Image (cartoon, rainbow, N blue to C red):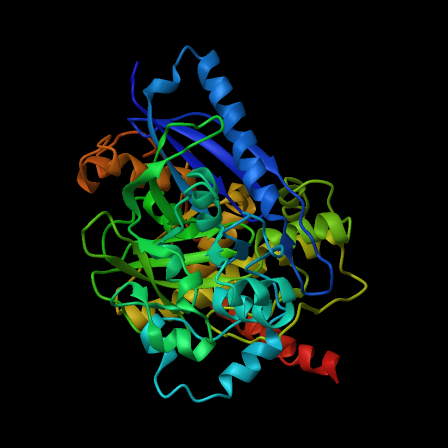
Length: 509
């Protein structure tokens, strides 16, 4: 029996997990809890910061209890890593530890007018060249601007130099390492690269960007690597464990899929869908609406960069069918419904609930369903929903092909929606390439476990991780659609996209 283990906190958009892996990369035990999604107004999405912390503690407590019941001891766990929903923005009082507002979630659209105002200003330099990102409501800086302009407690704390800004990783790390009693205010380079405030080449906060957005530097966390011992947990069920790794959730999934070579591509079908490609040691500036981002930085090694394309709605569309429309009673009903029809009956669904992300970047788009007739049933709607995620992924992958000039031959898939057999077959059909899905689906937790394990010496390098036999088994989906039918689907999708544009502006008239 292996006697060394690594823990992983996976704090996502709708749930939190704590997972324990052994030194072969095998998942030993885990625990998961969902938490409340707060939608105080249309387009707004918030999380209670205490819910995020509380679910981490409760998941760790239960997973460690299970671990003990398996005959293992706490001392066999060598460290823990944190992976988290990215861009979600918090501000708290460093003197009291109190959050000054709810966490504003990455998919929140309240900042549309701030984004419009900022885009009209001339910064005197290229923001996208500096940080790899466009000005968009997706990213943390514009959410922080909203908090500074609309929440008096945030403004007051900034004036009194008591305010800490951070993404979810920063909030968790600060609290776990002591909070008001010496907690570490840090963030890793992958999370920092999603704020609009970090220089992509230096991997440090950029003074020009801070000046443009009007954000004081003293409220920002220190940027650290993705794999090093930051400190130890100072309370709770993980008390004494080294905190040794930190990655944004999509970067963690990429590491968990072992996409260590230039040209490797993965897509995570979670709340949204996030397609990432490893481009190596130099950032690539996209000409096709993709994001340039940091994939990971292991200790004092040079950072590894990637191209990313995101669609804001994937699994969220399934939950919408379940909770808002009542078309399904549980997510697993989707395959049963969608497989009962051969096609969508002409229905196309653009789930632009928060606008459209890459490669379109249309804040003014809204969810649109076209082609409805009296023939349409819930089976067609279910299939159109799965198809929409796959078509959005196809658009991103086409842009990646153009930017990278690397011919892509297979896609590695993970995330909750990848459990759908129908969805994965549709994806292979619409891409015209092989889709591989690992048998072990917890790739996000595994990725940050790799990062933390490297920092504490559980593995010596990426080659050792690459050679692990565990988790090599995959399900393979081969394309079955001919080129003519594939091109027809893409034409219909593009026509549906055009019909979603501008609806937010109509609503504001």
